[in-house]
Image (cartoon, rainbow, N blue to C red):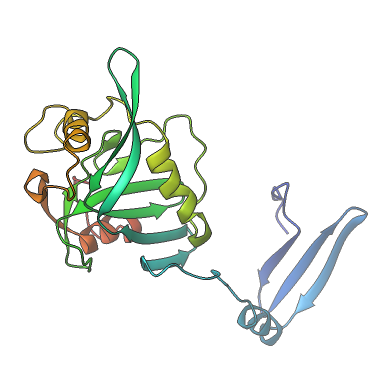
Length: 225
């Protein structure tokens, strides 16, 4: 066999040889080799199971592939409390209504958009999320540690989105009337508005399915993602 570098955390390896397979187990006192038939290999992979655990009803799509896990989920429109950092080191906790939010995660990359409707489907048009710190849909978490995409991590990600302070990064071009979306957020909180004003959303012609195909499956190119 050709010389090869074994990953430091590897426990075993499977080699594909003409007519058979060779299984190698890495032990502290040496390596163990065992020849396997195609039937044995097939049985081993057939018995392999993947369990996501209990999946939240707000998960729209789940994909597990060799390049990692991808999840599409949403949060219904409603009142949220967020932390916003304003100029002159002023930081405020604001309670205000936000529209339906759509979250796409792949690996440690997360994307956030809004929707003008309460029901989210593959054909739902995406809108710019009316929040700072989001560039071309991709969330900037700063120095915060972000978990790998997994159903069990969704609660942590949503909490991180709302708990981490929103600052002035990417705060322009995120709503219809204000140059800095933070001004809109402060106004909605001060006026105690019950529902996010949909006309403030900047709508896109791209859909939920477009985003999935561009970011996850990479079967299409869209400069907006």
